[in-house]
Image (cartoon, rainbow, N blue to C red; front, side):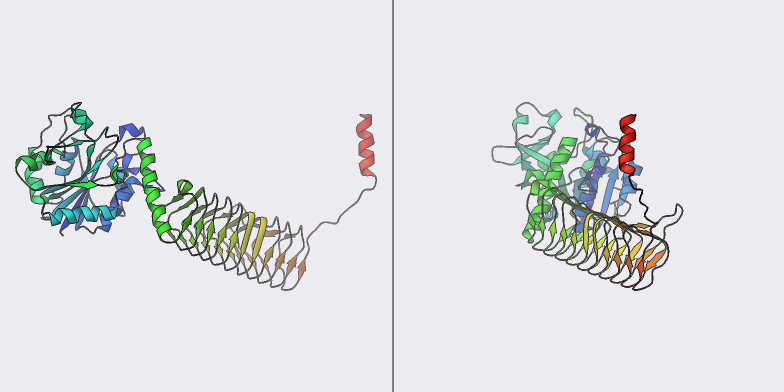
Length: 461
């Protein structure tokens, strides 16, 4: 099938009440328009034309990584006019044109493939997607005769009270033979309440001209729901989120509460992993098999190995965690943190741009930044790598099997040798030799009778 795609994304989205263009509003860390573009790319069309209008420079910049032909609609005179603006971009194309809306983000690739295949199988001149909805307000109504044949599509604002009772609606997704499209778009008029060129008018041409028309009825209307308000944005997110969660569960992932689990469509998760409630997994995150994630965990752009446990209220971004690691609760892994096999990162620990070696432990209340921690190392509670001097970052190295006592300050650049020990409460400013004990403390003084003298003085005052 020779296919081109037109995506309509020129509208302002007044009801969103936002400075951000409507199609750039995010769902699970990804804009609505990105969902539509990704779906369009996956069906492998010969080319994609993207129609922009309101704040087009902002939108154009946001989609700069996509191989699309940008078409500017100026002025914006309706959906029919928007498609007509693409004629030059598709002038040398002679196949079928799939027309999508940038504010219908939940439509799936399987649906688009089935729709375009049905269009081809029926040799239709025009095909469109329709759906039965309980509340058709705002949608164009699909009007049929008593034999069930499509007569026309009437927009909500132009429909009579009787026509508004119709619950079959137009989803705004079309597949049209290019020859029919360019021959008939010019015949659209603006005799409607909004004085715009309505794209559904081509359906009327198809009926009156006895062309082949296919109304592709979709079982799940949520998949083609448009977004024109914040409330509808929330509903679209629920639809997309439910679909993503279902795919993971079909692949062997346990999601304890799908209503409170938020997973981006770019995430991969291995089988027999369990995701607990109030957990967010987004970006280019890959999680292995047999893991336990959550509850209330946030993971973004991270690689997680097999049999990893990430406990309550932990936050991970841009990090790499190998196998059999236990983390949390309340730990924070910042970008370029790398946790090796079998390591433990405990509660209230922050790791930044550091490697924690195989079997090493940072159990609690510590900050490790710009450090290379070897294998079998124990980092005592309250340890801090003092990596920043106000101008530059410096590196700390702790070699294999060293023991860092509680409340140690490691003032970088500094190296602690293999099997070395630092005494609790020490500030280490010089390298520590392998196997040595490093102690840095001021002498402890004791003033006898001090407490009683203080109490006596307080009573007199």
